[in-house]
Image (tube, rainbow, N blue to C red; front, side):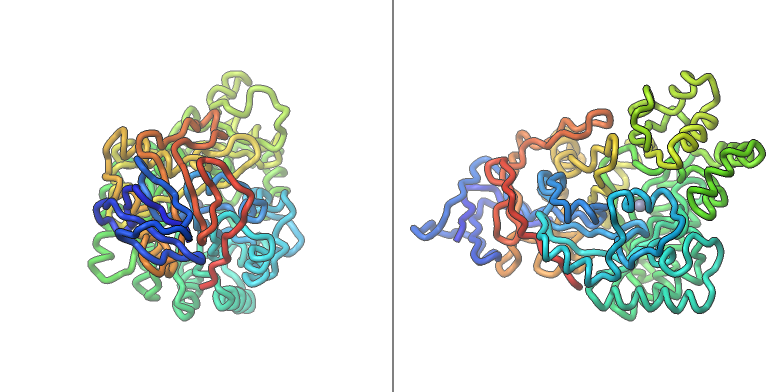
Length: 512
Ligand SMILES: [Zn+2]
């Protein structure tokens, strides 16, 4: 038995902190209150610290990292992750054939060998993980499985097969379905296709997370599309990493929140998530017109090598930009030997190369076979505050470890939330921030007996020092562990003790 005592307990429900003790036995919280220490208890003195539920990252891209025992998430106090987001899950397995760069990010590391959700969960259980893992089924993966990178509507037979894959993965314990509608091949799915698939999700009591079709000029239509899927199918809808991208679209945040509130009033079950950063991270290919990627990377390379198609791609890319080429920082390229590329803004690279921003972008894609990751400075402080403080918003990392420089959210989302936005900037109370990182996402994603410090709940616990929690992780030097995370316990097992990581993998596969 382990007794957490002398700490300030924030239970994750939003309720005010209280000076309580917490008794853990056999993986669960067995008592919360004025527990007296006894000789059979290991006592953990939490003086000066906050004791909170482990953070629940419902929008993670650690699909592979959990199996590789990467410590970035648990070091920030995360005890449960939901993977399979943005349309990309590691199952069902992909066929041999041309893919797009976003798949190759996973494929480079020998992936997509899991035929279904059950085999992925089995592997999590076999190798163990630092954190608990739940998964969504990715639309892009399902679509690629049944119809490759082909544009346009799926044939009726393909559609049946997509539905069957989705249904069996949901039966095997996947908790829902995700789309990545501004990237191929998810973007090829129209409303009718998504509606049909969401009906399958509804039948299996799952929910739908939407990386929207557009976060820029057409974000209002994109939000409406996601909400309408909730309206017509009854499926709960989660709007993923909500933001309005680019200076030209900042004024759209108020109307977006208006649409969401109207849908809630209409009875649509809707939630929001967001990460606490002004910049996002994505593939440079996301800035291209979708036709340029049709057929996969090989075809893109051919189009970029031909003057006529290249200039058409350049014109359409330029017209679709909602921010500038100085807002895009290259963080990872396939050819890491190129001097002065990783860590530079595309406009700076254009300056070195003596060409325009868009030409530099296309040249980078050509030289790196389409594999260029960028940090994109998208948001205003004011909008970030509006989204993060909205009562429907859970805080997420959206993080994964990439080649080159990963986004700092992979290393420091929750320490940033607590140190920067609670202690330093006072955007929220400690209780509110902890709720957005634990109780709220657990309820929203129906992770039973997690996300709160209550008797009978799993002992997923983080103890942090409110005076020092924070991170020095930055866009240019992201790979820095956070400060102030004192202890992390997952299912009653210490994973971090006195700030030191222990090599233990108590995380479970959370099958729905
Ligand atoms: Zn996404």
